[in-house]
Image (cartoon, rainbow, N blue to C red):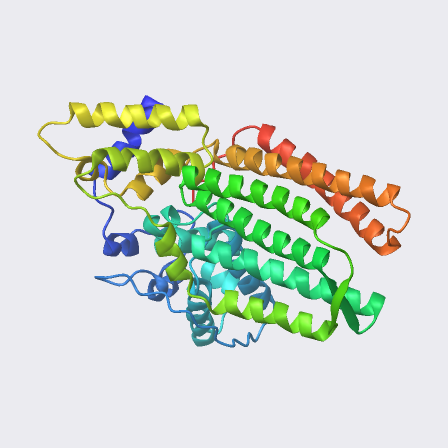
Amino acid sequence: MTKHHDQSLHQAQTSNPAPEQLSDSAPDHAPTADRERTRKPIRWGRGKPKPVREYKPKLTWERKEDEVWAASLEVRLVLDHDAPAGLADQVLTEVHEIVREEGRPALELFGASEAYTQVVADERITEEHRARVDAHGMTPGERLSAAFVSFGVAGFFFCALEWLRGGLWVGISWPAVTLTVMIVLAVALSSLAVVARAAGLVRGALWFAAATVATVCAGIGATAAVPDGQLFTVPAPVLMLACLAGIAAAVRFPDATIDRWFAKNPTDSDDDAWFARLDGLLRGRHAMSAAQADGHVREARHHLASAPGEAGAVDVFGDVEVYALRLAEGPSRTRRFARRQFYGSCVLTVSLTILLIDNLTNSDSSPFWLAANTGALGAALWSLVTEWRRSTAPDTHTHH
């Protein structure tokens, strides 16, 4: 741990290479002068980096092989390197222009898409960006919006299935209202718990998780206590439109606003807050155990205490999110996140098993929901086995 900490401290105390140095240094796999020449326009320019603009140009590739190459590059940038929004489109636009001017295939000009994706990631995805996203490459705002959109889509299809199964009009009763409110609140609170943990707010995540459990318990009790009987009926398309309205609201709400809600950057003069934030980031965003995170924090405190002068933690180590990323990257990163996903899959598998038992013992269960429950349980079991294998596999280096 001391060696890893010293390496991160050295990175924090030394400046990053200038952008022009990145442009002048050729990658190891660049075999020809032509490739070096064609890559130059899409490297960093001199001075400030070129901003990433969110646009989606319509590109027409003359060769099928170039289209396949471009699709592979785009997928790998997004899935393997958590590229910021718009970067893949910007790179492909520049590549498309060069391919058209040279009249040669992209494979010949830039090499294999896998290798060139790594070149783009090294030169165009900054450490600051990677430090502020979670394991899925998403900010708190993006992740919360995605959760609400997924919930809205699920509600839309549920209403559509009710329409097909029971007709146009859907009966509304007090138990149905209570159950719906409970589900909406539970999903919202559990999503906030997951986002808070990924943002490094471990204590906040625990509070949201406790509120989720309390909501479910209160909802179950209230559903059993309210009177039965239908209150009124609503056309199923109206409920579907309500779900679409919720999806639109989640999409249009600014992610940056939600990011600010979950931002907790300590002041330069508050070393205790800096170390507390480091502990939360290591445990929450980077899936370290409490013991591992505490060890890194103690190492950092020791280095700060032995540093000359009265420099604070920010002066010695730099930005806390970037420093946490440097400590967290390494061979065990994949295993840590696989283990976290394994625990989540265990909870999902138990819940689906209980639901399946209830469907099997209930004579009024729909064959459709029984089949859907069985399929979902099978998928959860497969995910459980896969994540267990990943969490126990030998260490693999996953540094971008």
